[in-house]
Amino acid sequence: MNFELILFAALVVSGVIWLVDALTAGRGRSKDAKLPMLVDYSKSFFPVILAVFLVRSFLVEPFKIPSGSMMPTLQIGDFILVNKFTYGIRLPVVDKKIIEVSQPKHGDVMVFRYPNDPSLDYIKRTVGIPGDVVEYKDKRLTINGTPVATTPAGNYSYVASGLNYITDQIWHERLGEHDHIAMTQPDMPPVIQYQVGGDFPYRDNCSYNDRGFKCKVPEGYYFMMGDNRDASNDSRYWGFVPDRNIVGKAFMIWWNFGELGRIGHFIE
Image 1 (cartoon, rainbow, N blue to C red):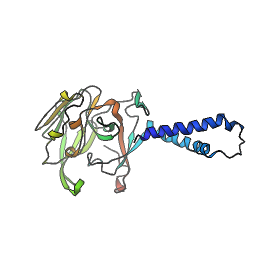
Image 2 (tube, one colour):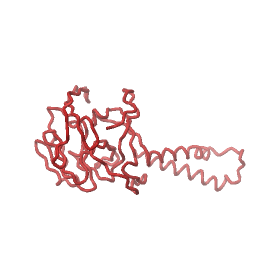
Image 3 (cartoon, one colour):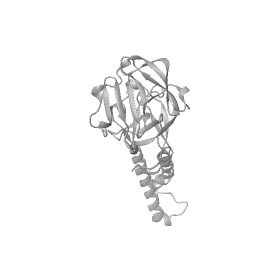
Image 4 (tube, rainbow, N blue to C red):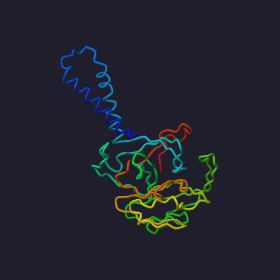
């Protein structure tokens, strides 16, 4: 469901009703006269819808985390806020960038429209930016020939879908200006080969083997991975994220019904 389109349609309809009444029947109506119900509702809701539409389109947009692919950084049930103008101002509905502000950087946690189905919003960490050579070998990340700094941080246990109890190894990892925790399952391969798509754009930029993969990020695209490396459906499997699919940068957890202590945490 395209909530932005629904908001826009409600904004247009309520605005048109209010405007038509003001230019026709409203001209001869006394100030004390009761407004027709439809006009009254339109006049009341138009400013509210306009405010929500502008804030959601140009400033911040709320999202709910539906999966564990970004654990432990983001938990299932986290409600997050996404900055819509960090990477540029885009026209709502048509989603065309009109003002360039900045580009995604290594380590940014970013919301984007899933390339294979733009009606779905995904959230992952930016691992590769245009021109980068990203290599993930034996579950160690290398960018442009330089290994990403990591420090072992013990284990992390959680209950996954199907009530499976999983214990992962966790690592302090530094990507760009972001220090975060990534985690891996010792018994899982770095890439599940049969899940790798064979027809995504610039597929020839990537090579895969039993020890991992190596990809060169094309201009205008980004390579995204989840912090929960072995439980993330990400660029390893469906390819690069085009700039036009970017929604914004995730920056804060504003609510979690199950863990109130997470409220107000900024996202690294």
